[in-house]
Image (cartoon, rainbow, N blue to C red; front, side, top):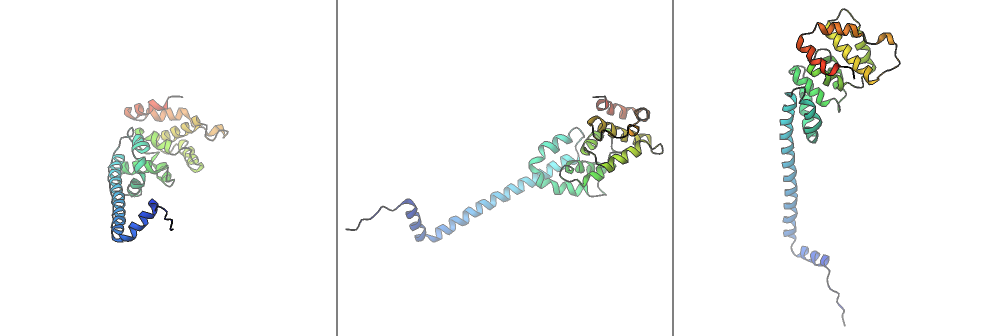
Length: 212
């Protein structure tokens, strides 16, 4: 007698697919189409949201910028970064927009430090803390430049004052301890420069320039 074993579920599926090859082809094509459409939808949604966030970053106030860059922008960085690079690397771009784009990119792109080091000395006091902190820890070239500017009587008082504030932050963090004390920022000179600033600028610095 012939002893037949029951056909397994996998065996039945194989037999069914052999009898209905066209249906299998249609089902496979449908699955690929659904997956492709889902990916396209995800990309479109990501790009659209990244465009909105990029515009928000470029027009943000100094107090809003850290929240956007460190929070809302993070999941959309791969879409937003090309847009931010266009603004950051365009010399003809609005200076405020370019500054914000560079601040948003500097953690991932060290080349932005060069532009930010320039803006450290002419940005508004509301923006100064963001620019200064984005350059921490400072490289030796920047430190030497700040030392030279802070002790150069031929540059404007405002520029020397900004250099002194950046150096004071470095000293507070203990960066480069052990250097010649004669090169420490001249606090008296910085105070004189501060008195020469407009009242609004002085009040803008007071909150974060108090001793720790």
